[in-house]
Image (spheres, rainbow, N blue to C red):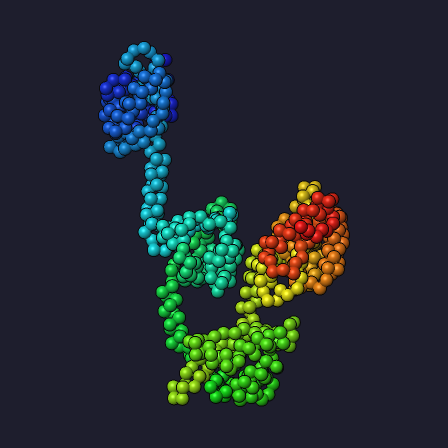
Amino acid sequence: MTLEDCISSVECGVFSFVNDNNFTIQVSNQYVSDLFESAKKTEFDLKSIVLPSHFKELKSRVEQNITEKKSNFSYTMLILGTVNFFKWLDCRFFINESNSDEKIISCVCFDVSDLKNQCLSLKYENDILNLALQKTSTDVWKFDLATKTITLLSEKAKNTYSISVLENVPNVFVEKQYIHPDSLFPFLEMHEAIDRGEPFSEAEIRVKDTSGHYKWCRIKYVIIYDEETGSPMDAIGIGEDITAEKDVQLRTLMDFQYKEAMISDALCLFEVNLTRNLILKPDNRIRELLNGNYSMAFVGLVNDIANMIVLPEDKQKFLADFSREKLMDLFKVGKTKINFEYRVGKSLVDYYWVRVSINFILEPMQGDICALVYVQNITDTKVREQKLQSKAERDSLSKLYNRITTQKKVEKFLSSAENTGMSVLFMIDLDNFKQINDSLGHLYGDAVIIETAHRLKRIFRESDIIGRLGGDEFAIFIPNVPTMDFIIEKAKSISTAISAPVLFDNIPKSIGCSVGIAHTKEKIDFKTLYEMADKALYVAKSKGKNRFEFFSE
């Protein structure tokens, strides 16, 4: 059987050529004939069909491999195929080991034109996309839903924020105050929609740039779904600077303040002359809210509302905000519109939220300071805001304050005028919690955390700050405690409550806790107080656990 017979049925290109100037082909199979137009001739060579630059590279590699005595090598080259079309060949060359200078070289090749063209097409599309991202005037980024990581794609976004990758989204925006406080709730609502897998979501928010200034952005998200599972995979975000647009809107709103105030959903609406202390245009709806007559003097009306419908807890704030002198002073320093929010109702169980808006107007004839006052029911908005705020402040498992919120609340009290007595911080660490997780599983461990949180909330007041700092570590801060005996009793209550067995999946398990206690009458910061309690906790654990210890120098 000849070589031609052996290679004729192979489903790939097989040929051999002489190591001469043109790489003259000696033997080839039908696969090669179908590839090369010139293969139909009696004699043909590689130089006539391989792209000149590729032939030069091939010849160089052949000489190099012969010199280094290597028997084979691979090379992908561009050749002129049938009907004058170029084709890509993935080749493996084998060098005959004869001592002759004119060596015979064999080759096995495959047509990879389709694959190569696809790769080139993808590269071209990617280059076009990158060019578009460099030239676009909007911010573009990718949001990885699994890792909660944002990767900036457009050059404008990278230059605006001086970063390329941002992790722990959306929490990092809150922690580093990248989002203006007024835009926090629509920002979190947008990310809740993303978490729910909604295909589109958008919001208009104020974002801090590298200069430290906030600018208005219209942000739109589009979810990309996994083709096989149909589950959300990534989201593409587009941010458009609308600061100029917002400025126009603001000016328009200021020009039409009076008209804006005349909205149909107002609970009541009236005009007052602050200079003369008079109600100019009374509203029958406020008569209904006050169950009868009301004073035609502004100060009298404010007192009637405070005494009859504002919650007692908000009464002093209401009277202070609506002081006639204060309102007139606000107008004199350039204020044109102000808003206040209060709770109206019979008790803390039965109430609703209202927003009172005041638009100042200068009476042109006499120069009196007047105001248009309107009241709206904003209960639904407040409930939604409170839910979002609770989600941002609370630990998702225990529903206690998270570490950041705990620290902020303690720091706020320590630096306030209310800090007049002795305050105490309890640091609590569950004993042998890792063993519970390892032996009974994380579901049992979660149940222990949840039950511990319930027990701590039963011991302490709502005004005390109870937080989960992470893992099995808890912290409780009590401001202005009366005595040392009070602190000791609370420490005993903690130990007793947590030592009771936890029942989960019909498995009772007794746990204990170590408690470190730091108390002070001095003005110190949270970090110092935390370190004191942490050192006391370390002592309690080193002495055998299931006990409490006070910090001592």
